[in-house]
Image (cartoon, rainbow, N blue to C red; front, side):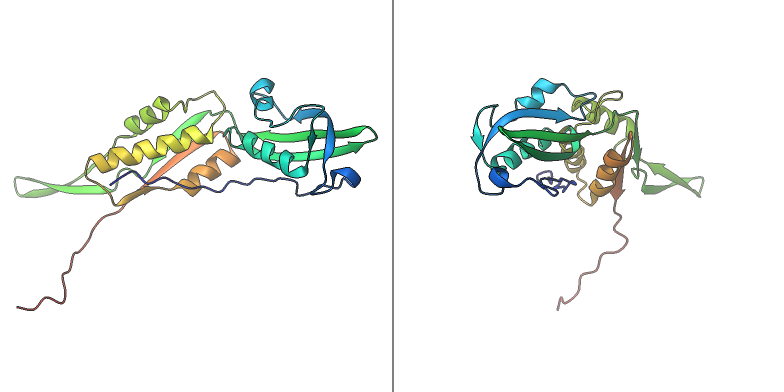
Length: 213
């Protein structure tokens, strides 16, 4: 069984509050007078500008601007990308308002202690909990996918790491599990601690019905 790919919808604001008129209205073309990028702290400007499908002096439409905004968002480094065309007398200034993902300060792994075995010693049953995948291994997988403390979180790298974690479970023969992607996303959006909640399901009972001798 192949590792399941998690599909996540992140908050992405594109042109929700465009108030420009005239040439910059949807469907009409206009000349790009300048491009301004706001909100950068950890991310360098050049990689962001490389995502643009146009340059100063080009004639574009709002659809072109939105397409470039999507390419910036797809870098995985931002939780908000908001393009705001501002019309001036001799052209339109395209302002991209960005909000970066947080710089990672810590990683927390939880939920990977669901299995219990009772050891029989001298006829005494002792509960013994064990991990299918140890937390250290989960963190190692994150590091292997460039998810490291003290650098900005890239959600693309986080998703690759989740796929790698899923693959390790499946290679060990365990398919009844999931990584709670929604909580992972919330931890990226809300703070600087990346939380990896793993849910391991237990089969409590198996029944076969409908068989006739």
